[in-house]
Length: 291
Image (cartoon, rainbow, N blue to C red):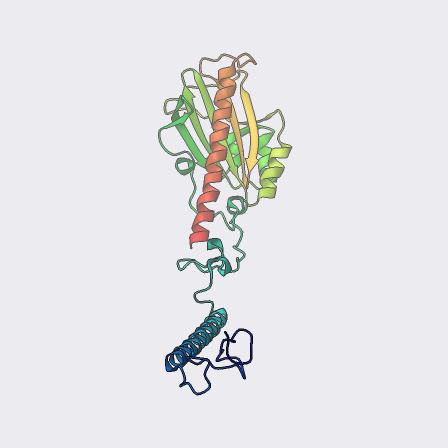
């Protein structure tokens, strides 16, 4: 048997407006069920606390996000604490020990040694047979030549023969140095004619012909050679120097095309003379550059 309005008794929902409150019995004069009311109140309080806690967590997350974004924004200005991917590669980072670079400057061109032996004005250091041909012997490769007689004169025509005296005089030769070297029965005399300019030396070389010879110099260990016999001669020039060689046998034998050693001897002394003249220019160029 039911009481009230009929049908099942509805449950009271404290969150539902106008819902019927429960009582301990269906009688209208019964006292309220205080235990049920207390339980409903506790349930309501728990729900409120959960809402407050949830809302606080959301607020904390929001604040935390704002702070994080503020840190990233601040770091974006000065580059500190940026992610590794945003930093430059190692090769792009400047090194603390990097040497400052400067714009290249134009270095002066090196001095040309030939300029110092091409004119009397620049070729000023002392000269002479013992300076141009130092020592008592000369080694070229594995061959050793012994130094013999030497000569130095300002009268160039006295140390040459054939058509050469006239050529040297016409081009104003100022000095003629001669040195003889021997090896066995072979002997070679080198003659170095000195001019004031390169143009004069070059002209003398060009004017020399097959009858232009330097005189063989004998004595001091060198027997007579090229005295009526056939000898081999060479002519060349470098700078303000023209140089000549004459090679022959001290036993009076003629030099033929088969005597390769005679050709080698003359070529060795001509090469050595060129090297010595060039070294003279190099020494003066170096002194001028360092001075």
